[in-house]
Figure 1 (cartoon, helix red, strand yellow):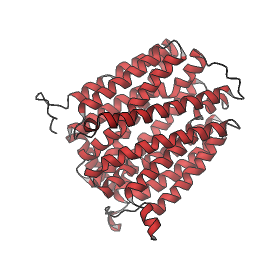
Figure 2 (cartoon, rainbow, N blue to C red; figure 1 turned 90 degrees about the horizontal axis):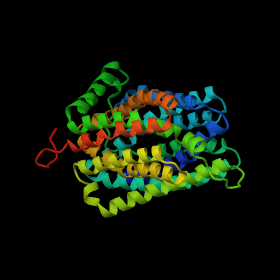
Figure 3 (cartoon, one colour; figure 1 turned 120 degrees about the vertical axis):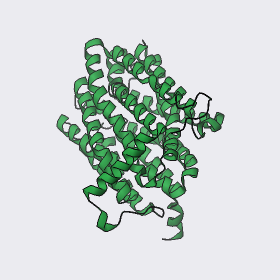
Figure 4 (cartoon, helix red, strand yellow; figure 1 turned 135 degrees about the vertical axis):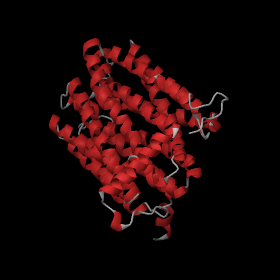
Length: 416
């Protein structure tokens, strides 16, 4: 490897590069995807919920076996396969038909599960558990910044045709997979011996180890429950917020060629700026709390802020209040993500099952969304979207108690 490529292949630098490129391509492909599904394909609110349910069912079925690929074969291989598969699925999504969009969710959703947990497990192995928190934080901040660039690119391409940014993002993910195959290195990962690979026995052994870690430790059990609650409540807001703003609150006339595309590009841009500012301020004002070994209070407060933002969005009677509620929720998620992932990676003591255990967190969220999406969708269709959103906020709020109870009565973090 030449010296320049060796510098680029530094694990921390590579992880940050991956996060930035991922964010740009994700924003490019998905900033206007809901607008595309409603405005071009003509999906109904029920079909939008079905699309989300198919995606989450795919994630649910794929998280464990793809996590085992990362633990048994290679973290790098799992990430590369995932990026290429995501790209292919996103390209399929540009076909303006309900069946194509459903098929795309299966393809890119499966690809996502290959990346989920594997990238974090890879960088933790390479830089060490004690040094990974700053890498996660830096990666997340770069991710937020590159999201802004991707949103702007999506807005520009979307003015031509709403399918263009989707196709560009899909092709970009395939290219990113090829780049990561060159940059990622695995100096601290020992794959399973060839004779033991691809056996049901090893699949079950690795999965069993992940299940054991997920059930014996209070922190991991708590994250599983919190992930379940988050999944139960997130689908209704994530899938129907565009419909609520367009059909219930309304958008001012800008006089541009495509007012809806322009407005939602601006909304996404503002949300990313809010998330970036929130992350930077939080890490500047409260670094000790965010980097604590057991940040229980921080996570409890952030959950309450998220639930409050959803409630505000539900009760809002005008565009400004609705956006304030949604952006409050998004900002809290932006701050909590690196804190939660660093906490989890410090808690998982067996590197051999790290990706599998992290994938189980994604499974808990997927189960919640599979159950909560259709259920709250039915509430929205019968009692109104506002009622469904308020119910979602009420369901999520107890997650703050779950984090808070991790502290013992003396105020010290509770032991496993």
